[in-house]
Image 1 (tube, rainbow, N blue to C red):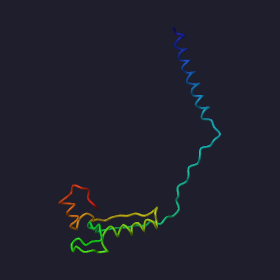
Image 2: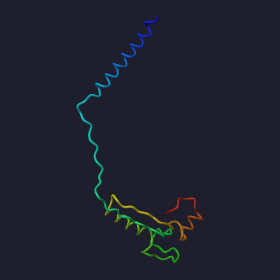
Image 3: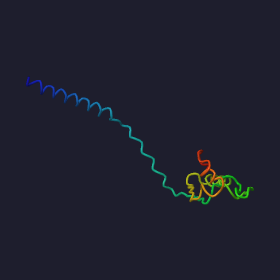
Image 4: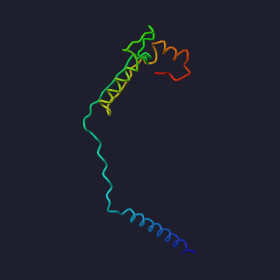
Length: 121
């Protein structure tokens, strides 16, 4: 009985050693892992675009006078933003600095009257 315990321990140790050797020989290879590509650290031009006081002007329309106004609206602004992004596609940042969803009758309607659907801005 005393001899069985050391034999079991010897058998378990030898099986572990055989298993470890098989893993080590499977990992032995002359192939070298590929080197990682270094990050691109070349200088870049950052284009910053900033909008402010959009006041829910989506279309080129003056919501107070009820007349067209080509200087207003996200429709015009979207074209300018698209042009800037095409000129510098990798490093263009657009930031809006406020008063986006209030200030016109359309904004008031979506904010206070019919606020069930998703806000258009």
